[in-house]
Amino acid sequence: MQGSDRVFGAAAALVLATGINALAGQGVTFRDKSGNMSVRNADSWLVEQLDDKFRFLCTGKPLIAAWQRQGLEVRSARLSGEAASRESGETALLTADLDGGVEAALVRDSSEPGADSKQRIRITGPKASYLASEERWTLPSGFDMTRSDPGAGQSNELRAGRGVVHMHPSSGRAEKRWPFRQADLTSDVRFKFVSRRRVAVANKPGQFESRQYTVQGRADRLTYEDSSGTLTLTGNVQLDGDDPTVMGELEAASAVLTLDDRARVKRIELKGEPGRSRLHIPPEDASQRGRSR
Image (cartoon, rainbow, N blue to C red; front, top):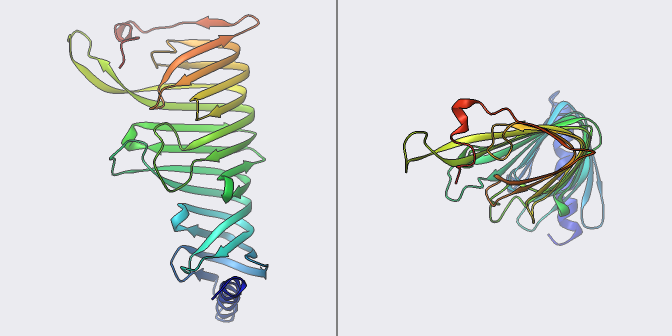
């Protein structure tokens, strides 16, 4: 098949799957020839052919759709979007709009070189939109985003009223920091970041161990730029955690956190009107503060 013929073939297969399953009294299911795209648990499906792609709309309670090579699975009550059929038979997702009980699960290689485990990102909320060409997620309502990367000893928890997140591509070199290329979150932003450091063992000169440390807090706005490893917090900033760079509870009008290439905080700059810093260092941890590597 060439051009629109491939699109028509994919669209026809989807319509046929809809008709057959509906007559059988079952939910709508679909799987493309390459095994990349699959849909199950849908109760309706509508497909419209365009010039070089097709537009689709489906509903379910919830429906479950996946694009294996794009490392993406979604669940929602309603899914609309556009997709294109490749010469290989693979149906690639181009855009998606999800509404109602949205759950999106993304899989990436670990940011730790050579790690066998994968890092996993989960997004939940009432609505979400996805643009594959920019790996962009637009989250217009309250949402939660979590990430776990066991191989790198890292995790993230994010909650906000609104946000736009650009991911790194699902294929290619794993990033050392986070899978987020850029992020802009607003409206009561809350966050928690865990990273792994090599620290000196107390009372054992010359010995080191690997430990996980936490930075958490809240702000009116959070922006992140991975190219510079810069996390900027503005408006009613609160920070705390046991990470050596935090050392207690911090409050300010704004804060800039700079991450090293393994997502560890290496610098914090506060600005306030005026800024305030309250430090509470447990005695048993004081000997290890500032001695990480």
